[in-house]
Length: 291
Image (cartoon, rainbow, N blue to C red):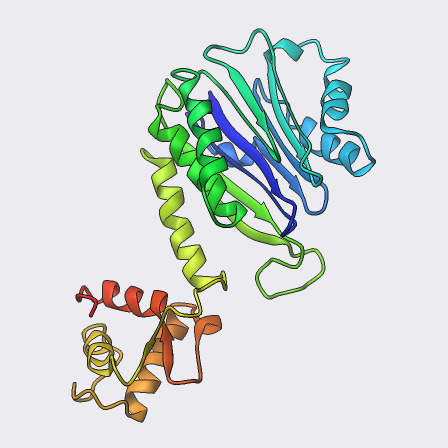
């Protein structure tokens, strides 16, 4: 009933899980992640106890395979279980019980494992693995690409309902390096006709609001786009002055207020420029062409 991927980025220290299913709130059941330790996906006839137990075993130097074999050793329903596990070394292991509803299977690669059951076919997992390996960028980009590829390939043959992604990074949480705050990305779509598409839409907002990974060259001079900014802010009700292309104090105050209202405080600049992502969002929100 589910397809998922567990993976790590050894260079950045990222570790995460992405998952989708015809099941309510799959993000509350399948993914289990611990920073500097690893990630687990427990699915099919999911046993949520396996998540924290396997993470504990990984933290105590069990390999992913050893950890999975340990939790399944006394499990009377082991043939109904499906698990994907990866540690911070990039060692991955997956298990698909013989009684999982077909199509069920898994693919293990360097630093990742994809697994699924009740799928339209093996092409779902093959597409996920290929997308993960070929996508450039951070772990979150690769996980979302894999999830989208699985969805595009047919995904869960019963339909669609929920999706989730969680990526941890040491000191990667909102607010910077605060002990125990490592959630770089944490998003869930619990019930939606197109959960993967909705998850990607939510991530775009998350990235714009919280992540700080803009391309340094992707900026606009406020002097050059002052008229557009004034027009957009006026249309949105933040600026009452004349649209004359003059970067005056009222325009800057209106822009600062709009950014604060939209939770973009960490994207404010003091060099007379605006991030391209923020400028494009402003234009889109005001339903104006980007120029």
